[in-house]
Amino acid sequence: MKKIIPAGLYLLLALLVSGPTPSFAEANFSGSDPSIVKIRVVVREQLLQEFHENFPDAEKVNWEELDNRYVVSFVDHGIASRITYKNNGDFSSSLRN
Image (cartoon, rainbow, N blue to C red; front, top):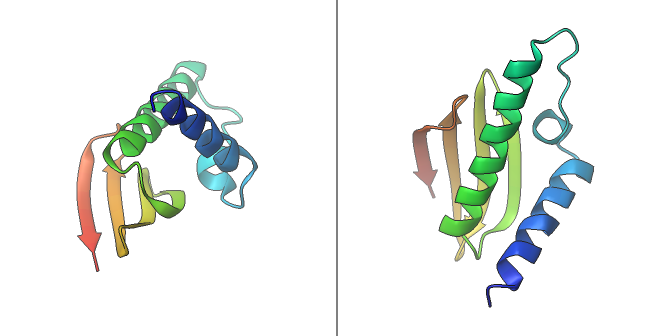
């Protein structure tokens, strides 16, 4: 079982990098301070890992980066959900329908 989790995480990362939501997956930091870019990448990696640990059965996962926050929409056990994180990775809000 433990071998499946890292493989799933790598698959999720690969989908994010090549998927249709480049706002989250692909950095467009031209002219940005390299240390800030590094922090943002680390925050994203931590969020992805935390999300995968908390919602291992999530489906239809969609990440977006909007107005200095990260938003993930997904379906977990048939329940449509949305979580918003601050730009530093701290939890901001959640919604379940």
